[in-house]
Length: 154
Image 1 (cartoon, rainbow, N blue to C red):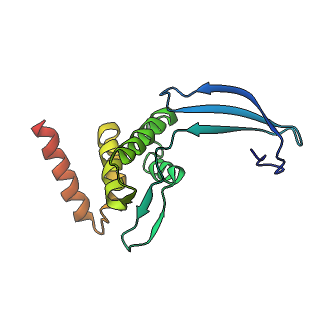
Image 2: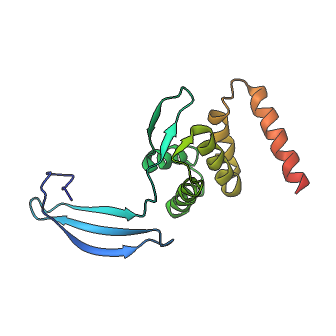
Image 3: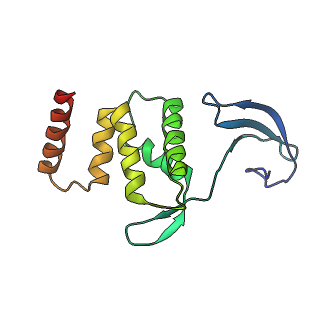
């Protein structure tokens, strides 16, 4: 493992432990070159997932990109990093369980919407505003009205 600070190849693992959900191993490392400390995560990857964008372009699935896209709607919301990590891990497991190498962005968006719907309604609406491409206040009103109807029905 290369040191992110000085690019030295000689780094040592100082501590290893499983994450809370048991889906990855967290390793604390130390660089013998510069003395810098950093953390790495080791996760199981069943297959390489390819994301198919709306314009047809394909790229490798990036878990960190998914994580960052979910952090934005959760800004200043009462959802901690551990819960967010659990949500991302759940979405990745679902994507891998589909058995398909190529996943359309729309499917990923739906899974994120479902995760937010179960966790935080404000984040759900924030994410929906981008995902569903709201352009006017009326778009928000219709979405919130539909959300309220669903809540009253359950």
